[in-house]
Length: 202
Ligand code: FES
Image 1: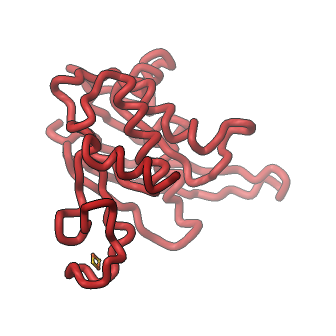
Image 2: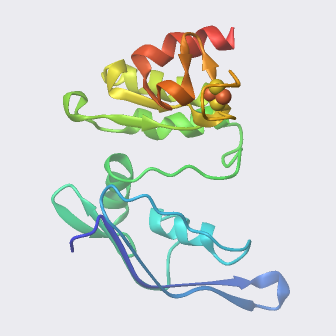
């Protein structure tokens, strides 16, 4: 396998026991291949099975057919059939998951939900560069979680394009301290952006 992730012929059916055992075949022979470094969007109308697919890939949903092959360390793991300990190890080292639900786990804050996969990451600080995007508080807490794991602030790049409007250094909307994000580049090292983001939130 050359990809980082390959799903083959995934099948997942839900049974609605409160509706006379009605069967909903949500995934029916779905294939997916994702290369290392590739950014992929699952796009489609509500209810077509995007979340089910993601949960299946993470091993939260047991599929009734197919394979989910993940390149993990030096081996390829089939998440559809892997023993629980191996699934946990894949989650600890290879796959992260952030739910769209703000409180996916009762009494666990959104902040903890987002930063927890970072805290569990096993990374080599001298061989790692992180790229973070999202709302500024999340950038900050995500970066602080990575710094606590030994990553240098300069090796954490944050994407700050959210406040851009004109995009040609005229409106001033994107100003962050001495930076004009549209002019100076939307991706900034956290060694520069961190103090500015902290000041902005005061
Ligand atoms: S987006 Fe207008 S100045 Fe940067």
